[in-house]
Length: 126
Image (cartoon, rainbow, N blue to C red; front, side, top):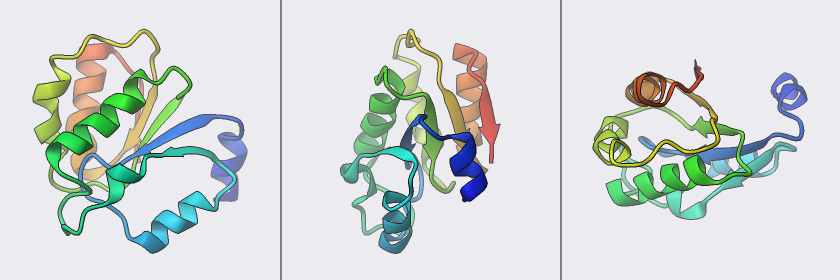
């Protein structure tokens, strides 16, 4: 984590969960890091083992990160089923003025493809 912190020092990062959520223990670790993280609590309040929140909430959290001008990086926690369900709504959004770096893995790949092909964003699969 020290290496990541060194690279991303002074970078505003939106942490989203467009698919699976994380444990409260892992969320607490993130909150205690020295990174400048924007964690929207409503995005992580599901008891479902498959989704971090309902479809609409997951979409709104991602949309907020996309249009927040202070955010430089959007970091998706975990992969998992559900991220592809957000693409239909993303297709209706205008391309934001500010490009973000998008990070995620596993089933988040569907979002990588959307951001690459539709908006020309740089993404990191990891």
